[in-house]
Structure formats: structure tokens, C-alpha cells
Image (cartoon, helix red, strand yellow):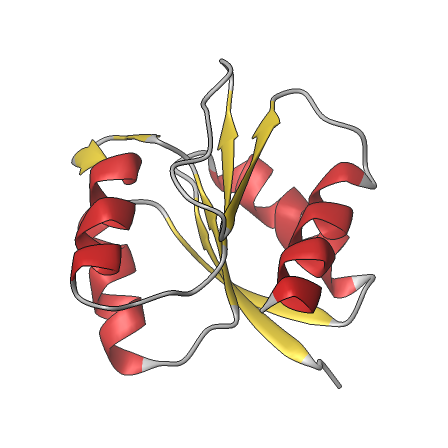
Amino acid sequence: MFTHRALIVEDDPSLAALMGRLLARVSVGSTAVGTVAAAEGALAEGRFDAIVLDPNLPDGDGLALLASLRARGVLTPAVIVSGAVVPPPDDRCLALVKPFTKDALPDAVLTLLERA
């Protein structure tokens, strides 16, 4: 049984699956999508305790998605996962640079969940 749910927004299916497995080890279930549009749909249909977000998606900018969510009052904590250093846009975000260790993503999500 999972204690939390995360939305993984990552266009690389194998990386999204790996992220899901890493989160499951710390009782965080996940739903993975690969586009901004799919993320919007998933967020409209379900409740998530955290978002794991690639800023470079095939149909748009993940950081613009996050800004749009914040403008609408969605304060779900987010971990931004990128190949380059991306400064977290607010105090409800952390950033990880790919590649990261197997503990880095679960640790970041759990840290944000503790803060929330």
C-alpha cells in the first residue's frame, strides 16, 4: 500500500519507469505521463502529493506547466529533474540533475512531503 502518490512527467518511458520503481521503494505510488497535455489531464482527474517534472517535454515546457499550476493555486510540491542545473522556482520545489543516485529522487520527494 502506498502512503503518497506522485505524478511523474517524463518523456523517456524507461526513465519514468525507473523513477516509479525508486519511489515505490519508499511507499510513494506513481502515475507516469510523457507530455504537458497528459500531465494536465492527469492532474484534472486525480490528486497527487508530489510531481516529478522534466522541464523539456515534446509538447511544451515543464516549467511553464509548473508556473501555470502555481498561478491557479495548485501548490503540489515538485521535483524538477533535468540534464542541466535548473534553479527551483519556489520553496515547494527541489531540483535534481541527471544522472542522479538511486536515493536522490526518493529523498527529494520525501523531503518535500515532510515540508508540505
